[in-house]
Image (cartoon, rainbow, N blue to C red):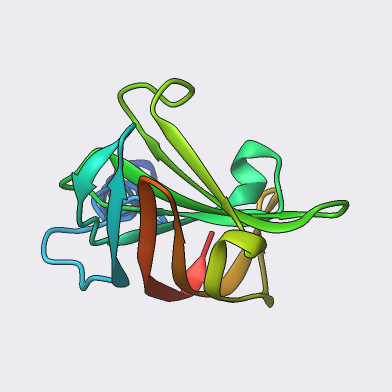
Length: 155
């Protein structure tokens, strides 16, 4: 007597789909994700914060060349932007009010402004995966940003 194959195939497919969907989102932080670095931010607009990013998101998702370093426990994002005309800049903004609570630092504001943005060779959908490092020591009257972060896979 033969066992029907359809229920076995259906059960196997359901188990495989459940296993695939049960993992963490690609590129998302997990509980206990190691920090990618830390920054000290002092600003009249943003206040005093020490973001400790645990997530790096490629700028491709927002249609810019660069990356976002996000702290899952705090409101600030440190964004590296590589502009083809003006060169690199860093924008620090609050997720609560992206366009009202923001500060931009350009190379001329910084004693140290080192970055690297290298393609890893991976591409997921239309998002390129990058290896990113950022080291900053920037200041001007009333505002400062100092720290570093790096990620081997930023997508």
